[in-house]
Length: 306
Image (cartoon, rainbow, N blue to C red; front, side, top):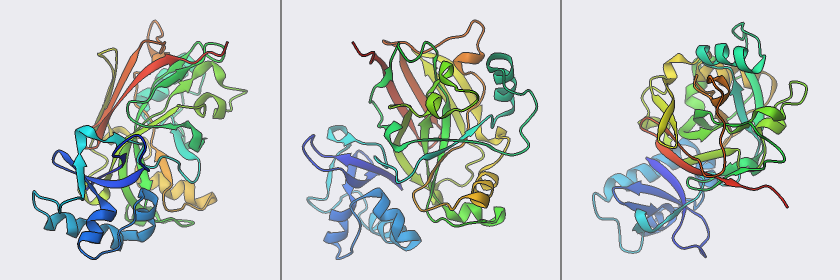
């Protein structure tokens, strides 16, 4: 299923929905029509575990092409929020997880040219999340080096400590798209949180595709364009550390929980690695896609305070 968080109108509360052809089927309303209790939020569904996803999936299979009256809205009329508008915890970011990106970062950002022996971890706070179509904020007093990174996002369905690598994918709820926006000139003595975690620095969405519909998350094309010009293109098969390795590594030291999000790293082609270097400026437009998952579209706007 392709799951979204949406508003039918600007005034409405955000709700959980399922994309069905050119409609969004409201999950809670569909459940009520069939006498089933379905949560009205993405985190609520995640908390239900596999049984909740199975019930919703079975209901969607039963409706064929015609949802019950009052349970759907046209996709074109809906307002899509980030799939999890306010994550419970910081997003896990993975640095230097594609070999060619390690090389370009070493040239441009003074990082090590040696391949990491363990995943390089950082985080983005929940306040960094924005929805498809929202503006990426450029504060010229803060940065003159605003950069892009397209990434596959992994959403955990169940957590734990010391999750075994061979069982890690069974803990995954689904997959989405994330852009790791980075202010390259805001790294502080090697600490990345201010470079990576400012407001609007985690575009996320437009949907979550449940894990059962992604047979191999390690064979997905991903790409990004700036003003219609392709800057990044690769495939998730080229991750240095695959998804089970990332989950196993993070969970060795910190308890993972349902709803946790992992941004799995970006391939080569970031602005810092180009010659000459390129950055995002107000008026630019970024489009990022992961095959079979979805596409994000974001304008860059001036947010410099007076």
